Length: 256
Length: 218
Ligand SMILES: Nc1ncnc2c1ncn2[C@@H]1O[C@H](COP(=O)(O)OP(=O)(O)O)[C@@H](O)[C@H]1O
Ligand SMILES: [Mg+2]
Image 1 (spheres, rainbow over the protein chains, first blue to last red):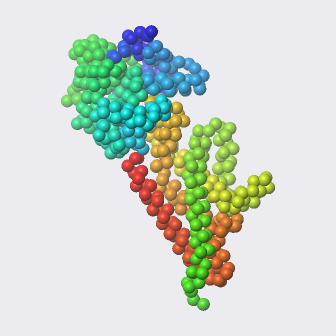
Image 2: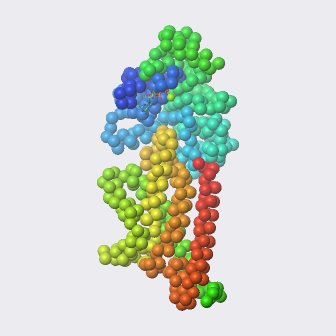
Image 3: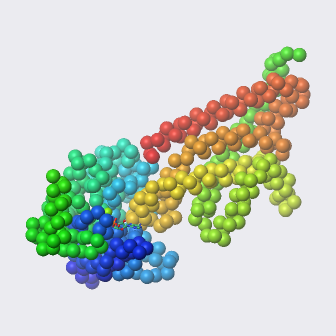
């Protein structure tokens, strides 16, 4: 039924915080299985755009669609709550600061929502925890609390937690920015693996090498607009717009 | 007439029984104040205005008036409207609600200071606000205030002596009864004090154990 080329659609997204206009008429289509990187200077609205997709930050204008269903459709409050909770189950999100639940073990972090929302039995939940933690290489830490894990391990558990809901789409907001440099690779590796499994992903990142290696498309955002977009070869090697060139020059210089 | 502790063994059973009552009432009231405190905190923060306002009044009554008066009100006052509670039940309810209000203040502050990212992460996997509060935010908030809640529980133990005035034969009243029979106030008050001290130590021990157990999960 639904057009696989318009699996995720953002139509004329507009967002203001008071008088501050953070997103200015942004439109974006993501095909099923496609991986899109969003890059841009700090404060350009990348997080806000990502958070608008699952309505953590409600748009002030425009629409978000996932697999033929409008995420931010207008409904009476109660119905909307029910609708958005169902939509969010289909959209995994990974945060810069992990936001693992500190009072739960890795296992419970992964299974809490599926047990509560999908009524999994204990055996099913156990199998799910093992499956997802295995996938991110954290099976041997299944009964550890977040306080006993390194940053990279926490982030991998957070990814497993998101995957446990079997989402159709994964959102990553600078998933590796808070990590010590030596821990970045283990998380990137997990994301690469997801890419190989054709998970649809939107990834906000500062890591140009990673974006170039993994993503099908790169969006450069600045001051609330998409300045330029295209395949990574073009955006990174041959950008058209001056703003993109300047950002990349500064950023790549800063990274060295 | 010096101190004569040889009078104690003859009345030890009465005082020990009183001690058991004190422990029972304290534990029951502590549980009520703990779960009641969580419930009050949720009402105070999230209930609709129409419920929150009358609730404020109840809260003020429990914080702003003497516990003794509250016990009288629950034990003698409620009878007039047909609620005739056994004295120890009235005592548990009075102590429990009184300290629930204090616990609620602690828990409210703790709920508000749980990292915003926790609610967001819970909402992101599809939990409703209520589910996120119950599964994610409140358990963390409660963990954060175990030490001050423990202090409230010690205060509750001490204030449990007040239920003697509605005729519950707890530790203080039992000591008084023994004194009535022996005219030996110093010995029996000291004995009661020793029992309070031991219960106090036990409570602190439990509190430390809980704190150690949850240290890893914070
Ligand atoms: N909740 C908020 N209230 C007010 N302003 C906000 C809020 N969230 C973000 N902003 C502002 O919106 C702009 C874009 O923020 P953000 O989307 O976080 O940028 P990025 O992720 O690209 O660094 C910034 O100027 C930021 O200060
Ligand atoms: Mg950001």
